[in-house]
Amino acid sequence: MPFTPFHLGPALFIGVAFEKRVNLFSILLGSIIIDIRAAYCLFAGCWPLHGLLHNFLRAALIAAIITWLLFSQRARLQKVTDRLRIRQTYSFASLFLGSLAGTWSHVLLDSLLYTDIRPLWPLTANPLHGMLGTGTVYLICMLLFLPAAAICSTRYWKRG
Image (cartoon, rainbow, N blue to C red):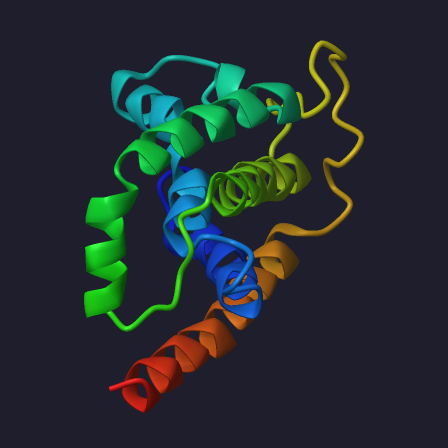
């Protein structure tokens, strides 16, 4: 799902379901940053499209980098979430948990859909490919986004 909003559905759902334990910024960022190379390849025509970041090991490293970046900016980010009426903690643990959940959910979803994903790298097989159909994965992503967006909206207006 290169550069699509579908990854945000599961990430947002996890973020609102575990609002006090998982940092929302980190999970949303983690869920889309994995596609940075795929977006480049989409426009540049390189192959494989998904490449090096679409595996659990490297996704964990990306999560650590996201955690470090967001932790270093936690005071500024807290002002943004306060303004958006989102109750968040910017502890190292909540940032890492969110980043890891975001990056790993991305790898998991793409592993179900694409043959060029190697989620268990350095193993070359993708045992997850084809476990669910494309339409089913997209439907799950959309169905998770809808209640998450409703919960976010409700919380925003209640906290006003």
